[in-house]
Length: 325
Image 1 (cartoon, one colour):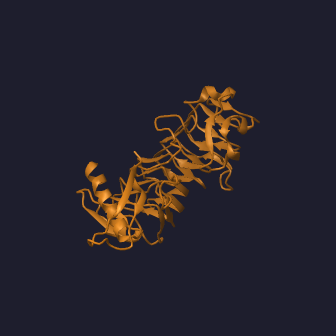
Image 2: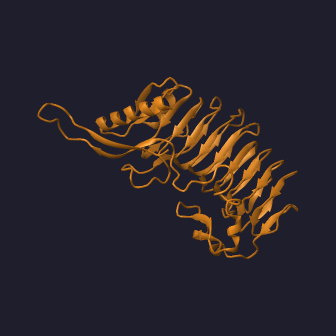
Image 3: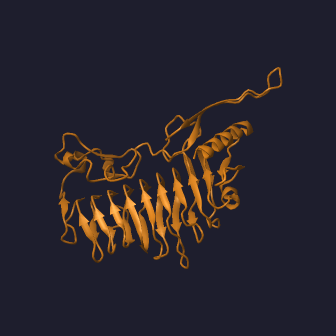
């Protein structure tokens, strides 16, 4: 890990020297290469490489598929103002296709959707964390070991009958997640396609979620416990029925339930529901939601690049780099 971070810092210095936005790719052996486009980085990266995306925008075309193990790391989807280039945005859709098992996506705002697997091929053990994504589609019911943690989904997640752990996310709805776990999420159920907040999830543990303004239609043999709901659970398992409670009186900054970085779903200190802090919702469980949403990658917080060399012919560059974790 130390070697990779050192290689990344060298790459960041090269970016400053070139005075242009570039993408660094660090191979498993520690070799660093620089690319000007996201497509080129994906196509030329060796299997097992880490692609580090700086702040800024990176367009991607639908014909570009990820077909090898890659870890894609941005600096965050709502980065603080310390980074002069803003947060990391991928404009388009991302496709994890056959061969991309054990890949990861972290710290990125995706304007479009993320697709895992396809009609013919499964993709296993993909990790998505600290991202803001329009929609998640798992396209093969044989996919397994998928981990989705601490993300915003602006238009829900569909798993196609595959296996996954979906925890500590904010989403409009979840469909067809089988033999898995739905834990400590906020589920708004407000998108047109999500009248049911959780639909047809078979043999799945549905635990300690907060579910707004929506019905729940579960599949067969689901285990449900400790969920806060506004309607009766469709099964007979334990549910904290919130009825007509005003959620603005429950959370510090409910923000009308909007999926937004401005939302905060901590329980109010003076609320009768404070007793659920640390048990129910995105700030609970094994991997609590992190409000800063910073991926584990250094980024430049200040850079000074002279327009010309000094009297000795030297170009004196100054940079300050901060590591998030």
